[in-house]
Image (cartoon, rainbow, N blue to C red; front, side):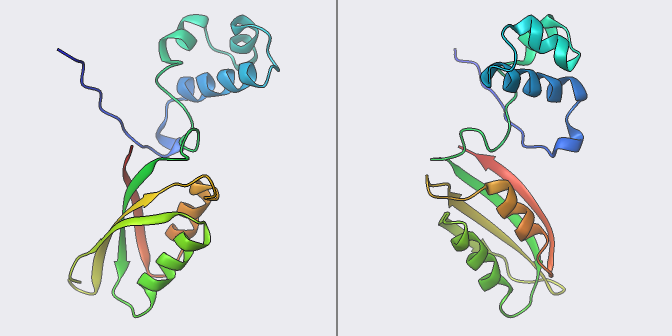
Length: 147
């Protein structure tokens, strides 16, 4: 029987400090600013056991995102041209829209679910999501999954 793993996408502010320090220790090792695991964990202030416990379970979202599909949902006002603005931002970052579904607006609010392909030429996805989230008329953006 194979193990079933669940994955979650959370904002940085919701991640426990020890996990963020594991990511930083991994960066130190990858950039060769720390020669050993012991040097890296001392630099960030965690134990070696914490590092080894979590090192394979956390990574920055943008890491390895090229060639991935991301599904996310936007709650947005029912305003003419807003969907076009969303799609233009995605196109501007050179991501490919794979699926799109917009609900019928209720009380002037619609949900838009998008599946996008992150290509080698795609710009920084976190910046793209921040730009989408800050568009006037967008209430929230939630990443539903990544494969």
